[in-house]
Image (cartoon, rainbow, N blue to C red; front, side):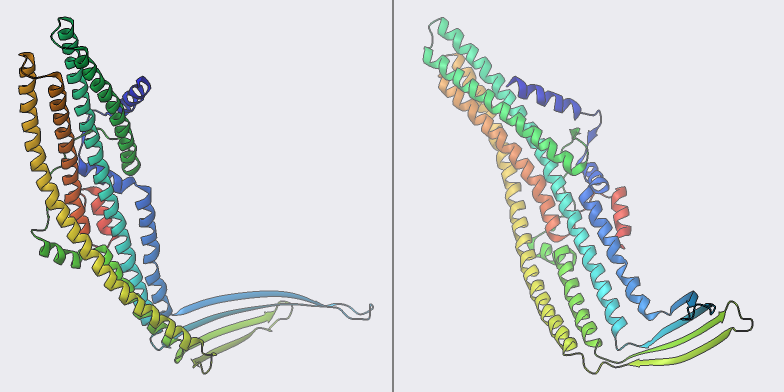
Length: 434
């Protein structure tokens, strides 16, 4: 027990800066420093490059090449001199797509859909991180409340044990009362050590997400922007849920891929122009120049069924994307409904738990006074103290659940964000194109 107490004391000493920390500050810090979100941010930047790559096919393609060659020609007769030629050539070529049967349009549509999907994936990762930070923040606060409640219980039971011993010595109570108090005190000390271990685990989980240990965590404020009813929550989710936005982007990508596959079997026309120059290094006035200008038309006539097969493949994938969209809609509906129900239950639980604590505190005070006058037994006081502890633990759990439930609903509808004015939020708005 002393080892756990020493370890926890060292941990709390390392995690107690002077300034208090709010949930909003923890969210901003996590968005700025969390490596998982930073990796997703880089993936989004990489995906954005697919659009200029797709558009490049519609722009002129210019290339310049140069070649210098030294060639030796040996004769079979060793008396003959070896011929040596040193020549150079240079060429410049330009091509411009004139008609691609929708290839470029399909490629750009696919790129835009990929970007939209990547933005949705990033937003989903971001909101998941914010919700995880909320849970970690609330867990640390709950663990602190649990430790405080159990420390109070240990203090109360210590006084009760000492009181029982004093009464036993004067013959008011029996040895049974003393041992009952001692057993409860030993149990409370064990549970206090367990609560301190749970607090240490909560601190580590918080530090993993936020990147720094928690300081004096302030109570989480009430969440703004919550839907007024379940119908409003569903309507908001239809517009903002990253899950739905990503699924819609996948259907657009599948449509574009069908068109791109079909376009591979159609006419392709390019304008090509070039100039080539060459000469022999050892021969004056040997330079030659060739200019060319033409139109290249390509029509695939037979590819062994490859193009039709790829088109059928992409159509099947498009059908699968539409089914995935329907599944995503059902999943979001379930998530929003569960989040709304959870929030309603959490609000009711907090009110009930507060009433329970108030009543348990009054009852404990009354039973303690009645014990001093001989109207209550030691067991009755022990039982009432346990009721008070249970009420305090229930309130800590209910308050934690309410903080999480409010943000869970915002995450389910796709509007969970850091508080207004956060620098990290502004940077992410630029990244997401808002």
